[in-house]
Image (cartoon, rainbow, N blue to C red; front, side, top):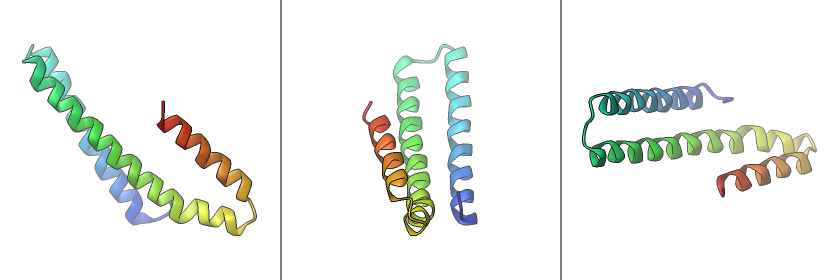
Length: 89
């Protein structure tokens, strides 16, 4: 993250995810109802999606534009293509 605000937002979202995961672990340890546990895992997945959005926006607004200005267009495009392919798996 190149901006302090972006870094703070990313860390905030990671803390939320970590807390949720600890909660899910506790639910499993306590043999709570499967549907309730699964609902929490869906919340974590959504939180990870939001975290990825924060990271990607930060990357596009800083690293990508900087790379293009520096003449590294193909490198930047290749990295974005790789990210896209990973997101489709």
